[in-house]
Image (cartoon, rainbow, N blue to C red; front, side, top):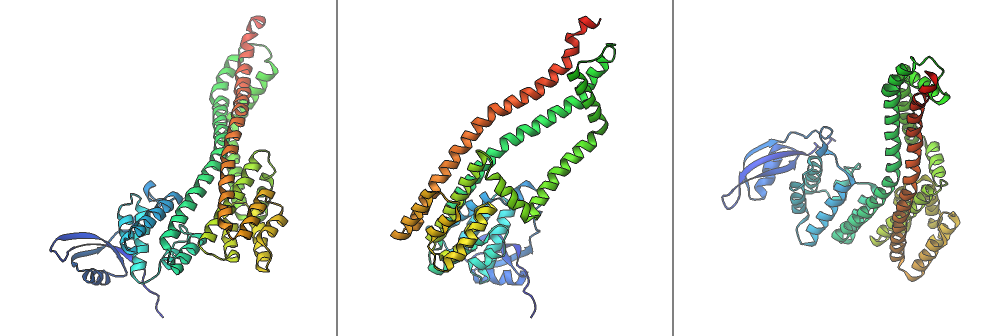
Length: 406
């Protein structure tokens, strides 16, 4: 059987039923099919041609971010709640989007829906933008006839998840940025500034202080081998990132190790618990069975330790064990979380209890990030003061002693 031709975007101009000249863009498998589709809508097509594909990798506006998907979900849910048909909602949201890549994505989904596919099938064709969790919830919403409610829940879930990720990134970005700035400043001093002092010191005719001599020798090494030093540093960073992505053993080691780091480990643990609770709450609210939900929950935790524990809990739940007992046995969840889940299981309101747990731990992460930032600021300032101040003092020591040399 021949493979179906992929739908592409076509721009068109035509005359509608009232005699007004109209134009737009429509997804279709061929020019003839697009014209036929327009005629069924009461539009007499005058021009129709294939639209050139945007260069998705070439411009800043073409990159699709999680925030774009979140806004799209909220807009689509709002349109549907207002009674706008699904296809027309895609048309309105897609045309109004400033991101060229997002506009192409939305209109491609619209074309698939117009061709007879349901929304879940259309979304599954774009796994980079719509993960299994998203598609599973949309599928549940379509089957239950509550798609707009599910889209609102998805948008809320993504907004909270992205806010949580942003807090974690802000906790890690500040010290990383300061360290990079310190490396750049020290490199400039070593390669350009200290050699100027070294030429001045060569005329003194006396031994340099130990600190100054050490800095001069280090500067000479930097000047001679700077390309090797930066190459090794870049290679180490790149290699570490590649190894982490490709090696499960390294990922497990790092994820376990980071949970034991003071302050930062606490933030990562609370973040994983918040993601676990928020994801499970969203899937419960959509009517997804617990065993089916656990796979998506495991992937959303963001830590392999919690991933492995959640997958183990999935197997235990499948045999009839209560969720609260599985969570307690894992040893990863505080007693308060286990008790909240137990109350939810007994009262039949587990999604509500999970939502409260997620709210609590998201606030805990926020407070912990602020505490970490306030703790790091003086420590980093002190570190920079010692490094930069030490270099400055080392360079001026011979000048202070110049009187005794002359």
